[in-house]
Length: 293
Length: 238
Image (cartoon, rainbow over all chains, first blue to last red; front, top):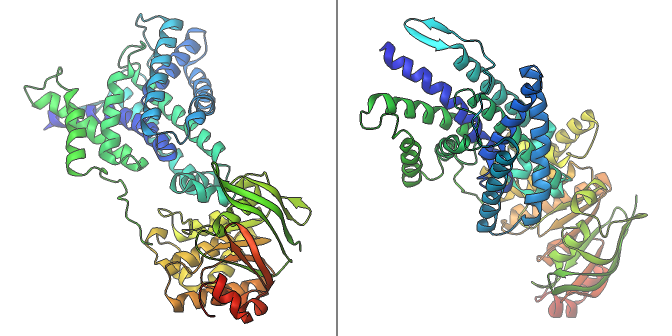
């Protein structure tokens, strides 16, 4: 039993990171209808910025704060420069633009920082909390805490501020949002900025567990896609729940299904994506498009 | 109080021109009905007024030129457009929909008062403030759309086919409320309607639009009385 709980705890830690990444995907999808394949690479780039800050002698948390600010501005800039010109273009165009962005950011990181792996400092203390035979690492607790904080802040933003209400209005009906006086272009840029910031948090949290290198987010992005699909691509809360489920499912499958082990774990999100699309395409919390007229 | 003046308004979609030089004048505080058959350009006219489609010519509200401004800027100048299809924010609650109508306003107190006022005009909305707007009936959604527009405290209210898809009884009630709003708030109203009879019942002036041109203007009474007009432009006896 303790062994099982131990696996669940590990899964929660991983799941929190997937949840963060999935949340970034969902934020952009809600506002622009774009599935941003470059989300992982943006997070990776942000993580390099944090690493650079630390390497330059900044304390970790100062480097992180700076990274989040730069990521927010960068996300808004990308919306203005890369996405705005293709707004309203067919889906395929948008997919190709984000794939292009993926390749560009990946290559840029390799060019600036080389493809050699780097150690990323773990901001949380070593050691673990022992709870009835289950050991919960401080770094797992830290990850859970940070992700919970980000979710809480986003919830407050969306549900209890005027800007958040405006953002939800734009996601629901951009034409009507414009008619009530909301500056829609600015709101879309804000959405990209937020997504880039949330993604950056995920990148910084996952980097100490992996190694810092330009391709580090590839796997995480696949798990995040599974999480967003499972939760529903138009539901931020769903993305979080989906992330946690995917993280736990992946860890348990790796531990208890002999043939999966650690090599086939990456198959778990793919099975989840396929299963959700077959059984319930809108995901657990997604909105079915039913409207009365 | 400021009147709405439209001069030589030309508008369309892509290469297709829909309005060919529309000229009309709506005195402050009046209800103006735009009548005409399907495809005459009634909806396009409203869209040109609120900046949803690009237009050449001049639209002036008081001393302010509206032409060339994006819809969000026009809204901030006090023009509330209830669009074709009502523009409901489906996944949001009724209250959130209403509050969005006041998005560009400052002054918390006044907005709370207006929320109360709108619920006074439309009592069914009060009972459903916490409900998701997508679950409302067609009539309730039309009330919500007009209520949302009122939350702007608009100088001009643009209504696009408020009767569309509603039962006759509901429509009549809705027009009665629009008239009450106009009288109590002195809001200028431009209403586009297929149901000429109802629109003429509350309007002061009326204009008949045909293939992108105003072919007839006059007081609502005169247009209603003119049998020939009724047959040739409105397609039926009034």
